Image (cartoon, rainbow, N blue to C red; front, top):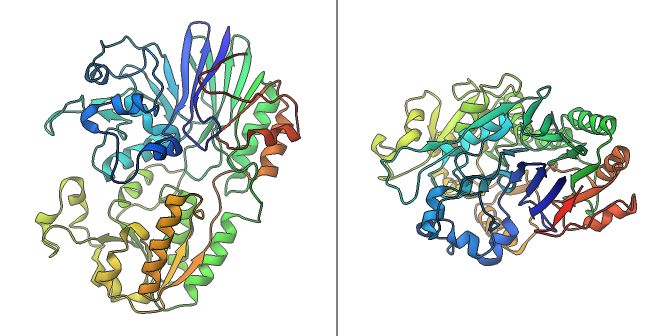
Length: 467
């Protein structure tokens, strides 16, 4: 018997946790954080308590309460006995938090399968920020822990397109797809009843749309008995968009000023990273990156397929923020940040501001205190290259952003290309694959898929669907 049980991603954007069971084999397809569910109960100054382990997450329904899934130390903290793992593997589509973060809670003996570039991104993420209980994907420290404890590493199995591997009765074929982060994959999974296709997150208007086409063509070829598809933008109003448009608009914005320019985007989006890096070079500017984003360059430059510059690239400047004494003393910088201190290309805010026409700063809203140190002159340009706010919390952040840009007399520009497929593209892809059953997830509008087929299952959470 083959079945699917959806523990997240149901009538919401993200939070995917899909249990695939075939005979005696059990595998999770992603195990991500649900931002919407977390935001229902928690906010900036009200968070699940690390001191309570997994209890707050279980009690408030942020993770499913199922046996044989979670870490021994977390079970003991919850007043339960440790449980033998009842899951054979996790197949991770990509490194975004809504697909990956809650792997942090899973039992240490459950192997995680992920793309090579995905692994590099997760390494960078683990280095760029302090450890938290919701960000222990690659390794974790048993709770309660002291800073001196050594982390326990998870078993990670890397793959690339062209690989095939087995997990019990399942055979898995990962296929690289285009998304707003490298190392994103869809899966063709052969079960005892037939193949199942899982899109992960995809788009067909990006820089590498041909990869998503490869996934669609392969899915058509194998004739899957079920298709699990994302539907993030299935009901959105459509517009013309592409990374090339972002490049053209932003290049014009940068080339028409001699003042400072700031670009605000998600640094994990390598297409966007390379767009602004290339604009900087072509306009005679150095590309300034934040210290914590330099970890992405450090790791992603190891993958020759990505062509990402390393931290010592002649066109890269690393922004050194004020810490501790406020005097840029070596003693102010701790841990892995120290590896950037002695580089020839590490500049302070004052050094950056003294060369306004020679830099393009990848410094966004959450580092805007740097504007105070730069003594910004009116007319600096701010390019917002992320999605527009879509909930109340983001709208409040937008109001604060506007207050900062108005205070410093900055000119604002918006230019973005989404990481998710447009509705028409997604419907066409699903129509082409022509599967027996469609399971729409990662969407608030699953009924839209009924425009093209009657083979749509309205997924309910915690319900087992036999295939």
